Amino acid sequence: MKVKMIAALATCLVITTGAVAAEDNRSAAEGIPRSPDGATREPKGITVDAMAQTRFGVSVATLKGAAAPNDASTTGRVLDPSSLLQLDNELAAAAASFTASRTEAQRMKKLYSEDRTASARAVEAASAQAEADLQRVNAAHRELALQWGSGVANMQAHGRADLLNDLANTHSELVRVEVPAGTPIPRAGSNLQVRGSSAAETFSGVVLGTLPIADPRLQTRGVLVELKGDAAKLPIGQMLSAEVPTADVPGSDGVILPRAALLRRDARVWVYVQTAPTAFVRREVRDFRPVISGWFVPKGFAPGDRVVATGAAALLGVESPAPADTDAD
Image (cartoon, rainbow, N blue to C red; front, top):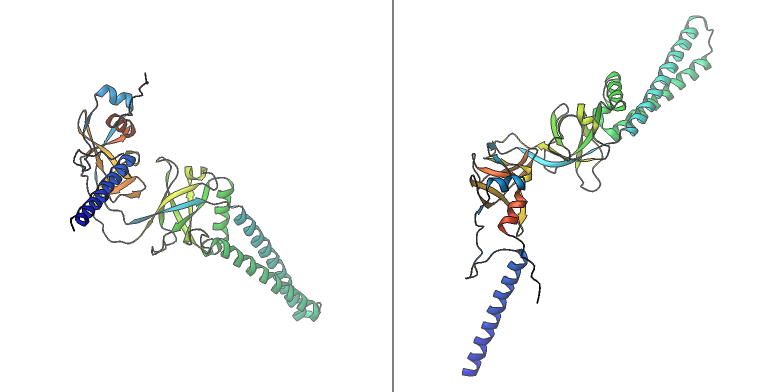
């Protein structure tokens, strides 16, 4: 009996030791500091003088209060308008042919009704040609609507001509913005914000309508957005980020962290907070949401907090310096 109890205790000791060792190995691999009793330590503050801050390129931003955005973050893509130009040319050509054939059919009917100088067969042929040209107009209009949506297809001819002229002269660009599942489709004429590869590339565009074809990869609906001015210089095919309104429900308050302030360590997201002119401490960021101007955070930070906007990676190097190389004798 005693032998069995001793064997059981030994097995438990081996299992416990193995679990502790595995946890230590995991923490070591992730770089999580651990205290002597095995508990994970919170980051300690660091001191960096003014000269070192300048050398590291450290800049600090004061946080301001912000309401939670009622927007869903999504993606966009600058579209190639060449197919739109081609379809519009086909529609214009079909419309011109229809106008001519309709006029001819009306002339033939008038001649036939007045003095029979036109035969009934000529009247029928002119009317059939006008009907055929009308069908080509309708087919071109349907094709335009199927590819670019009713917002573009149902434009007045002069309005669509102005749009195409702006596209051809790089005064406008067309962007497809994906609408996340469960999000209301933005109305035609409403404004959406899109963002390029840098914070300076933030533009406001006008929704022209809904695109009928779903994205083959994301399986989402899309809206067609027109960008004007400097935004028209974006290259075709560039991926963008965008914000789509979700609902008119007020959100909770929080702050917006600068986009470059966040850094990753130990599979978590952190920001350095300046607690004194030369003192900094790393604070974890939770429940952050991307917005056009940065990252919205509902808790953990308060208006007036000073966070490191640039140079956070250098401060992380000061907090956790790389071990020095030693030469074996």
